[in-house]
Length: 408
Image (cartoon, rainbow, N blue to C red):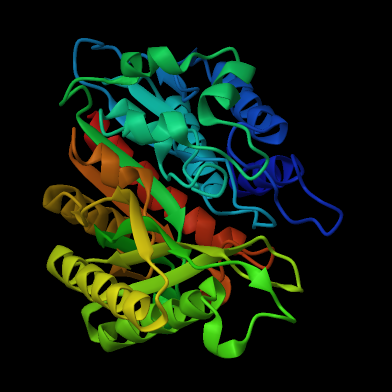
């Protein structure tokens, strides 16, 4: 499984769900997403791995070692994408994991069992909940919220599961015990410019920022755009616009604290040009690597919402969707990664992740480590997302050395 195989496999997955422009559209539990998961399962089988599907649809390939009683090492990532996304986010980790396993298998029998996991619904694009597959596996799922989750077409999360022959009622069966694995490793593209700016091909991740996601609903009063006087309007969109700016300003004030905040979706009701908006919904993503600063920023956003609600007489409610804590990667695995990078002879640096990953959930039940590979201009979640074959190869080589040491 050489560099050419890696590139060809990534390109094959990229073709699944691609639109006319070539952008990736494999939202969780869609036909294209399932096609990609099935394709990866076929590669696992060709490697002699036993494949199983858990209750949420995670694909788990297991290559048994000569001492199967020992806790296995797991590797993983995802193949679902955001709408009109790129070809490398998640896929590099899945293909890289398979390449590492294939290379070690070719070198001789493995002492420990190794598993490759394709987690479902890592992206929050469809149901507004991220890393659902790894949360289900680690017992971190908010099942009450998931049961109510609905996509933009009105399809509920339980219905999406049912379409794949899975049952929402069985999700608790996904949970595995702590220390089931000896360790978990994940390879991913860098979704920032940190590696590129430092001239490093590989990043050894020290910590993963946590996403806090919530929906803010502004309630005003709909009215005729031509007959409602300006002084007698309760325009929900005006208040929502003030909130968007307030959230941006709060994040800017905390920029040195590594806080970022995004209003990624704004819905206006009834949404007609000649009607004063009676309701607006803001879907907000707040992230940081320090939990105290996340809490502080969230409180400032709540305070701003209260002030805006009072100023415009448009009540604002907040519904928390998820609130994860930042996660530090295992120090021993960080050291193993650094030694592996030195052995391979690639330029590397320590890095942090501003994006969430399945590794942050797996870290709750086992030591977890993560590697980044350099990406062009730090572009991600966009068709221009790109990682050079030689940089992906460098990451796979480091991952392979790490895996070899952990399996020994």
